[in-house]
Image (cartoon, chains in turn red, purple):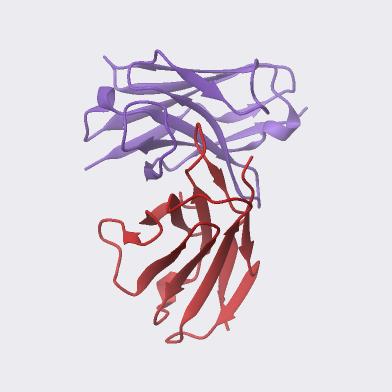
Length: 108
Length: 122
C-alpha cells in the first residue's frame, strides 16, 4: 500500500500571506494526486486533481505542483475562508487510492 | 446540480447491523462508479468500498471486508452500504462519493455527500 505523508500537521499563517502544504508518497504515484479541503462539519471538497489542475469553481489562488513522490499545495494569499484541513489523495493504485493524514491550516 | 444525500446513520450496539443509503440526483447515476468513505471522529479519511456503474464489480477495504456490502439500485438512483457485525471502531461519519468514471479504477472524488454519523456503542 502506498503511504501518503503530509507535512506539517498544523500550519499557522496570517491572512493575506502564502501557505505551502506538502504531501509525500512512499512510492511514485505519477501525477495521480488530488487535494481536498474540509471545513468543520462539512464534507471534503475537491480542489486539485492531476496534481495541478484546479477543479471547477476553485479560485486561482489555489495551485498544485509536483509529480512522482513530492507534491505541494500553495495558497497564494490566504482568505478567512481558507482556514481548514487539507488532505491529499493518491489515486495511482487500485482500487481507490489512499489519503494523507491531513494538514490543519490555522490562523496565526 | 449534483447532489448526494446520505441517510440511515444512528446509534447501534456492537455486533448489530445498519444500512446506509445515498440518494443521488443531478447526474446520470447509472454511468458512474460510487464509493463510501468514512471519517472517525477527529481523524482522517478512510476509503471503505466501491461499486462499478452497474453494480457488477465491488471492492472493500480490508477493515470491512466480509462484514460490509455495497449495492446500488440504478432505477432509484440510490447507493447502499449494508454494515453487519459492527464494531466500536466502525464509529464514523460515512460519506458517499462519486468518481468521474464508471469502472472501478483509481480516481479522484469529485462530489461528496454531507455524510451520516454512525455510532457503535453499547
